[in-house]
Length: 180
Length: 180
DNA sequence: GTCTTTACAAAAGCCATAACTGTGTAAAGG
DNA sequence: CCTTTACACAGTTATGGCTTTTGTAAAGAC
View: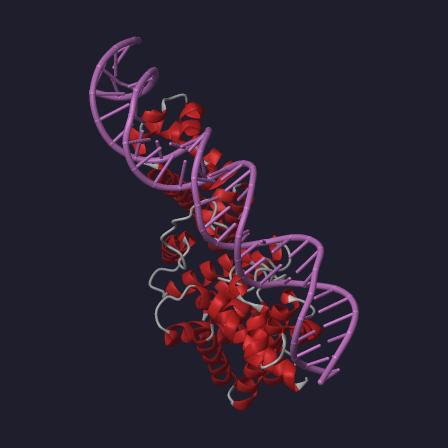
């Protein structure tokens, strides 16, 4: 990825989070990145292309963050808690990430998200599945992975109690479905 | 509940589903129920009161439907599938019920839903909890109840595969969390 | 007594117009 | 490869006048 591309993505992400899709101005993105408006069009075609690129970029950033957490802890369930905590922190810090992952409140930010009804967070199912496969070779991990992601997303969208309780609940369910 | 009240609630529900909150006309509700506009105001105060009453009514209707299904089958898991199927059918048939239960697509229908972030479907948690308590006395059923409702809502909002697969997944998880 | 009719003020919505702002494209120049 | 300049087009905002709807009130009918 070119140098300018990265500058533009960062500028666009900031401005998008601050002003929303509607209030986002191409010329503002350009000047924040120190380039001309035309360059933005050369890079991303149009406004929609720019915002889509931001969404893709944020998604990749998030998924690599999850994978890192899953690999860093030798205990599969502690690793899962870590990835879970990371997800919460990300969505709390950055409403753009939140919109990308959950699809909620995306109207003003990402009006066209094509995956309506299948939030991008579901991509995490595959990551979790691979993680579980590594720790429980030869076992059926699909149900556990999907259940975990669904429950995590559910707690993300509709918290009941604090973060630790939510993590406990999700991990407990995940463990028993693996033990079964 | 008076006779006219019921007529008005039915008329309002139909018109609300057809035209949305924005397009709902008090005089239309009145004429569909065969009464004067003033009577609608006497009954519900204002437009918001009318629509809120419709939401409450739909919620109660749904919850009693669930309770009936849970009680009708002697096998606790078959009963759960039945209640689950009922929920799906309801939300598919009636977009108003769907909006009330999930809080999704509620902008045009129920602009004021106060329970944003905690969909009314969560009321079903208590119903499910009671159901499980009856079949598994003395056991901790809270986690299973909440997990079941969260997963059901998740499948409702983001289907993956067909209804039967979803029901299988939810019930399997519910069973193992009870057996644990 | 409950519902209807009629009347009315205030708020909100709709329509057409004009001025303005932003998007997207193109071409020329550094 | 990026910038500057220019421009057509679409979309947004501001305006004023008109219409519809809401919500309240009072008088009359069954």
